[in-house]
Length: 235
Image (cartoon, rainbow, N blue to C red; front, side, top):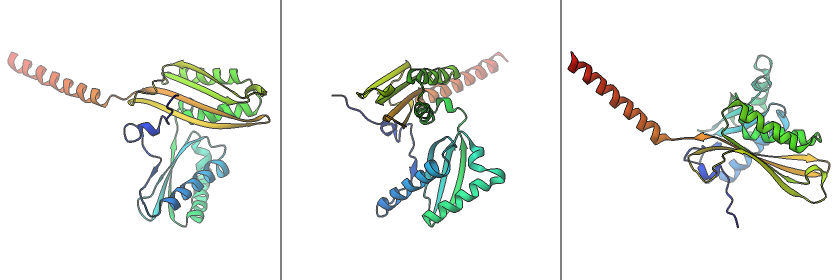
């Protein structure tokens, strides 16, 4: 049996950060439910077409700080900032707390795993050929040059088949067991006429060598000191 674990959950506190940044044991159930309602309202009701990657919720005190990561910030902000002001009022009516909103732009949605999975599910709902959709998504991610590997997996009644199955396509490296590997993960569901099809996407964006970077800085400083000493000796 394989031991499956969430690729972001296993890296929390190492190279990944939490999307809900608060801690309160007494009010934890209420806060979890409130966070869920906020995310559902923003992503599935208010801003369906804004291509939202993730929503970060912070509770530093008696107020909320919400960061919306989106590929279309203009839709979230609206004309003259009216859209974001209305959203702020509506969230405050739900939570009964003062709210501050920050809009963060996703510059490369082609290598954002959540947005890629949602794009694939959207095209599957339009009854497009699943192999063509997957190949296009992989080509876009690789052509940008910032993705070193990508894997896409579909599960369900793919292509209207009577028996559900899983199919996946991979390009490049996906080192899932390497903690320092920066692997972005996204999941979405395509609601087709034949049933739901699950879409999972893994995108490998490189390895984070913190020790290596510090070592390089140390070596550079050492080289600079050596060059200065040699110049002073020559003089």
